[in-house]
Image (cartoon, rainbow, N blue to C red; front, side, top):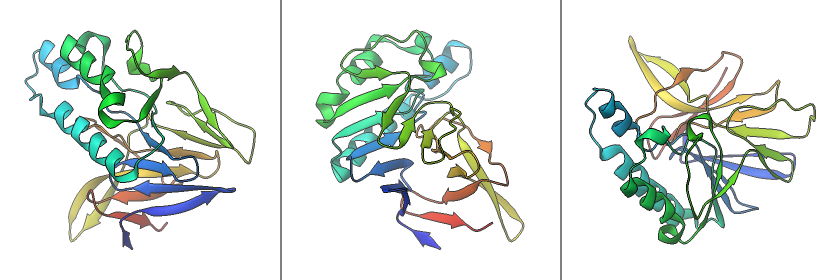
Length: 216
């Protein structure tokens, strides 16, 4: 069944999965995205692989549109804001440092493996962050607390669906029900992805307006 979003609850906390590759927490007014990988085109260009620079412009525009629509109290990026410290020029650094003022919203970064060595101002930085019964991280963290949900990025989950002989790939939200881990889809336009485990519960993003719950 196609929907413009999916809402489910973890204990007493509502979470809304959006086809724009973001997760919204209405109660705390927090908007979550991950794995933007800003500067990835420049990084590949430095290594002799020609890619256009339009992806970063599109990523900033999509963030601005999302924040305007949901008016969150806070934008939380679950890691890999940048692709590499070596691809951050002065223009990109200024755009990121001006982001909180541009969108009129506080911005926080939970550090990802690609953010190592990146120095940025105007954004609060954490290794791991918690809200109520939810832990935010970049890579999954092991928790023995049955009532705690871990929301993370890093995995870039994708799912393959077949239609009349065609095999199509879609970004998705993926839930490891055994470990209480919800993986968010990569937000960046130039990010790849990895197939989900069959045991994961999945919600496939078929467009920026539609998301599909996958029945196992």
